[in-house]
Length: 535
Image (cartoon, rainbow, N blue to C red; front, side, top):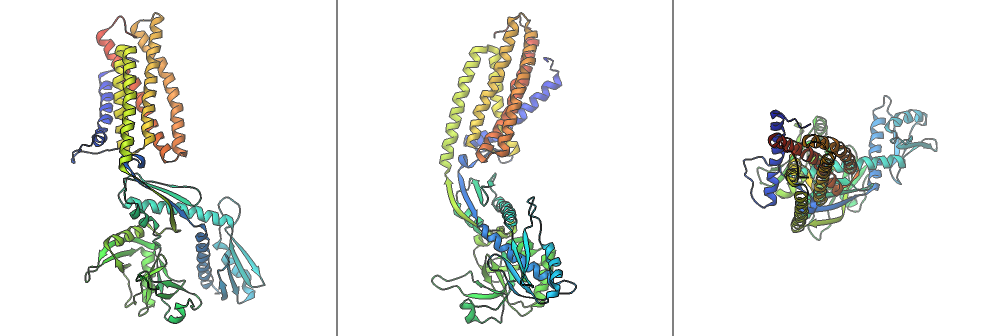
């Protein structure tokens, strides 16, 4: 075990120096110095508790999911019955009271309608139940109601989608290592380190970005619309741009048959070449472009409304068919608001509205104070260990101390290379790793001391000491790796930060405390050939 050929020595030193040098950008940053711009910068990202930032808790309204499912089912039923080989006429369709009801004009086609509607329902996960119930009452009235199992599944899917949309929006801001996790059934926790403007974050996340293009019903009486009265199949939508103190003007649009913004492929800030006003240029995918072309071709000369989050941005006339699959959204935008809207549209619409119910802003001063205290605690602990190891084990203690210092640099370097985030619990993981590294050294040195007391020669005692102690070290650290893995898999943000540092520290401490010290001891024994060792 004490044989180290030259190639192996060179290889071990290359690994050690490579990971240790990767820690320099982080060390320079903590020291408040500037790292040269032309060099690689694998810097450790600081978490919210160290770098400061914004902490926001968002909550969704599950009842909104139920409403959306009923509206979606209504449109699906209409399209399905309209495209049957023998179309079926229905009437008195209603989506009130949490159910969808409609009358079949020809009672002889009840069975055909049931067969057509049944494929629109699905199983609700692994519950063994459907997500919708279908009943026929009074001979020809269908009643479709979402089941609780279906609603629960829809809420789960909506929240998972919302998490991904929120993540895309925050990534577009250029932030590093945000924490975006579900908290309970209908909440999302968002932590963005380094972001000191919570209002901008709230504006970005609070915008559902549900974009719709719907035809304006020109037959609706404006006086009736102002009083909330519209023809069947229409809905009233207010304008977004309202002067202070004045009621919002409203228009009537066809509730079904429009185009949704979920078929966008891109959205970018643009400027009107004539007025230089900020606009948002959007591009549809092939399906959306075809629908948009069909809608504009069939309704030339008619107005259509551009609706964002339930409010009309504008309602221009369709002067000619728009066939290119692209359009421009105009409104009283500033550059910032248009840019935020473009980010929201590119990221996709939130499936449900998210409301901020709790927010915190952590200042960078608090984080800097935590770093300073953590470094002091680690420095004091390390100094005490160094003194103890040197006094107790002499030359071997020197090897242990050098390995301990290299271990700290290798942990920082590894974290910088893989882009992990250092949190306050992560600093605690650093301190724990130092103790674990020293434990390994103590096991090895004490075992060598025992072998010398048994009368073994120096080389034999060192070889057996490393061999036997290494087994115990690997077993103990393997169990620690399992514990850290479980903490990372099931823990929250701070617990994960601790687990990451612990896992990296275990691997590097075994490498430095067992492999490197064994190499140094072997080289010293080969060079000095001592008859006695001070242990």
